[in-house]
Image: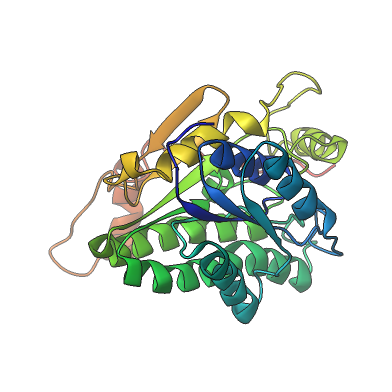
Length: 307
């Protein structure tokens, strides 16, 4: 057993499987007491089972750690409050919140149902906000805390995931904002963009979707077996570090993690500007734009001839 998180109390949403399980186990190994939250739903968020959370809790206990299970749905504001209270009432406080729960309902924008958008936004974006809001109320009183949110490079654009990308981009903005609100109270808020083999990524369905995108000319071809994603256990160390006292001055940051790679991303920065003494004339702008702001721009999805 390590001691990096000795005496800390943590809530981990989506903690019953995949990356959530890996983070739960490593945090417990480093001395944290864990509330493993998982509704045990399917990949699209439907259904539910107590088994994933229970199994992870038992695994932690079998290794000498302390853990309790929670089956509360983070989509509900009141259920998320109950989740945070479970940690406070069981372990006396909440030091760490890791927002990992998620679902997927991939569709191209012209085929996506409203329910597919609403469900993904509710779990990823609203769920992260619900838990963060209640955790911050407790952490503000304690004047200490660590929150780690989960975004994705899909936030920068990924065909078939307008719902998921919207949620993950929103989580980046939320992370930046809450970091500025809570830093004065000794609370840090950071986000990770993990890439690992999970039930969301390492599936035949995902591989088939990539091949369809490649055939349609909207994404580079990826052959089955060409890229082997690392296990979720490779992502857990950066999460544990960000949750520790060692990372007290790391706040409002965004990290990509895949295998042995950890990359710090910067926020969008102004690239180049053009100015006019007054309001731009449309004709003048049409003349100037291609030679200035538009110079070198590449269409990521050029027009394809109909099939």
